[in-house]
Image (cartoon, rainbow, N blue to C red; front, side):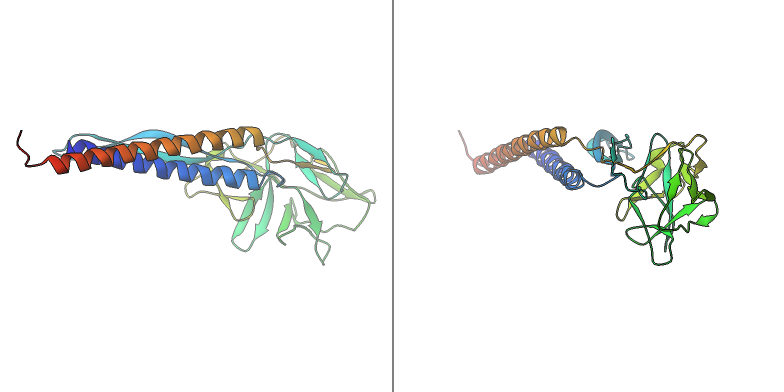
Length: 242
């Protein structure tokens, strides 16, 4: 009885901690619903098997955080420095920690006339950093940049055969995990100037899941309380004779 109840307490506690983790992810998704290019996070649960010598197999709960890379809807802004990628690819930006990748095409010009993110990271083209005039900028679907009728550079896009080889870093950036696949060039880029890709967060779906999680969390609390009551009853009856 004691061992069974102890495992019940462990399972209930692990499940509650997993629900708390998922609740944090939902809160973060909702907080970024208006962030351009944001990719929501999801948590999957699966059974993990642990085997040790001379011991029975133990089955426990596990969880894994995954990024949903589904494309968000494009919103027209008419800002010539806003870009949305339709389909595959990431913009490449230069950070102090190396090249990073983003779907957020909300760019600006720094004091030196270079295309950059609002965090100050340089947006990369085929020829490195992109220097632009402050007007008459046109970017074609293929990423070719022209200004005043003169070709200047071309936006450099990167793709990856396995998007789960990327992990989030900082504010809406991605980096390649250790051992992850290296970047590849996008064969047929499709860029929309004057548009931004919205977050792929469905507010209604996230709120519904939040309510379900709250109910599941309360159910686990009741289960733990019941297990604790059984333990107390077992302890109080030890040594009693009928």
